Amino acid sequence: HKILRPFMIRRLKVDVAKDLPPKIQRYLYVGMSEMQRYLYKNILMREADVFAGLAGGTKTKMSNIVMQLRKVAAHPYLFPGVEDRNLDPMGEHVIENCGKMVLLDKLMKKLKRSGHRVLIFSLMTRVLDILEDYCTIRGFKHCRIDGSTDGDERQEMIDEYNKEGSEKFVFLLSTRAGGLGINLYVCRCFSLSLP
Image (cartoon, rainbow, N blue to C red):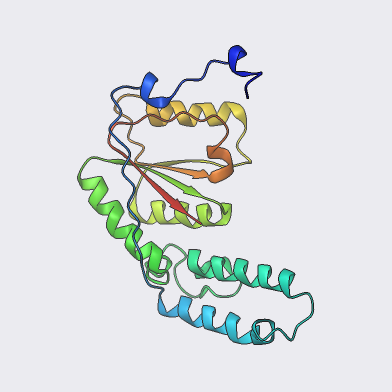
């Protein structure tokens, strides 16, 4: 860092965009839906021997279990066969079967009414698929960027979201894509991060 410092210009957001409001972080805790609790308990009971230390390769198995539990917390439909295919794929069950989605739905309606715009980051692109369905269900105009979005399309979406008077309410980003030098500047913007 000492060697490179004279050759690099480092600008902070506060030095460049002086009209940005201060960042405020709030953590909202929410319970799981009945379906999520069932899946969560099922995974824990199925892997009880790992927790008892009886299984070989415990560290790897524990890692896999934690990932499965994270998926349950993100949305139960990340597991194949969980979603009832007899129901409308764009029905309310997409929201009601996930505690985070119930809270997100309440937040989004409030933010829309108050004139905010929203960025939602997620580590899992499959969560972004579900969030796209949610936006369609609620009629929210949105953009999405993930690792499969090419450079031209990426820039078009950023420009469309940032343009004056844009109707795009939600911008969905994978966490990886969000770290690739994307500059989104929107007044009254609300950012959410989901697993």
